[in-house]
Image 1 (cartoon, helix red, strand yellow):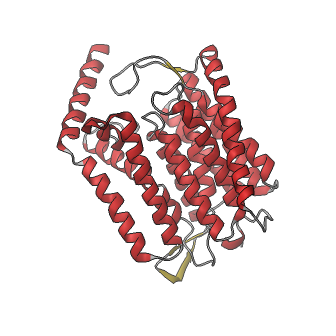
Image 2 (tube, one colour):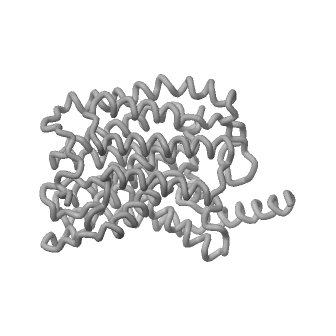
Image 3 (tube, helix red, strand yellow):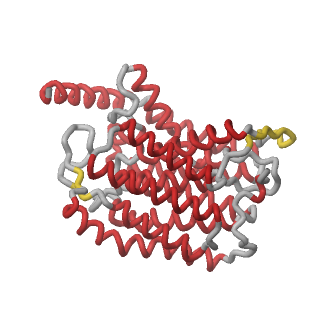
Length: 371
């Protein structure tokens, strides 16, 4: 059986600060150069987001082909800096497939069920390339380790990959939000990987962070281009697939808890959205304006300050993941408490709740008119 400590061994035994900076800059530079090309190309192929309802935050047609720029920037960086191996190939092949799914969805508005099946297929590709969640353990009690049966390992791997892929897709509701949160998450996981000597993951995550950061100047409010589903699904898939490989000193560290901490904000927001829609008897995949970022905007922060606020919360959780990986329990608990408190404040703000309900009413009226 493949051991957890060797699950993502790229044969990289040394990594300098200069090399890490090169990886990040390469991903950012290529993406930054390719984004204007994507802006030019988007209207020619029909990849344009036209606001049709009150849920959208923009009021004019916007190109939504930014995912192409990030895809090229990140993929080229992986080819340049990582030795090609079975698992590197798996990440790249899966990334290409999920990017194609996202582009088709941007151009043809793919049915939710079909898109979901395609995501499962992409996650299955990872499993076939031996990128798997093999076990789970308690980070606060490292004496216990539970290995999964292959069937369970497959199921858990698919759920994790599809779940994280969709969390990034669902938070892509404000200018710069998904790209910024993805960059923060990738940097945090890269740092944890580096301090534990898992240099292949460090390089891959820095490539992802660079790609997201290179896109931000064009995507931050006021945005000149959106990433589209091609971009958000690709970013989510890369974070999910690479975060399966948990960086740690011994085989007793949980293979999933650090990524959960890093991605806590989008994961929490997604779970809250599912619960909210179930209570309101609305389709789970239906978009609305009840997300955390919508509520922060409704509280009077505006798009820029709302995005920066979520950046800060994501950063706190990223640091919590780092302290957890170093087994600093008290510090981790305090940081998580701070982040959860901030989320609670915004979700329970009476003004934002009233505005969200008002927006929902307007959307229902518009749906009735359309019918």
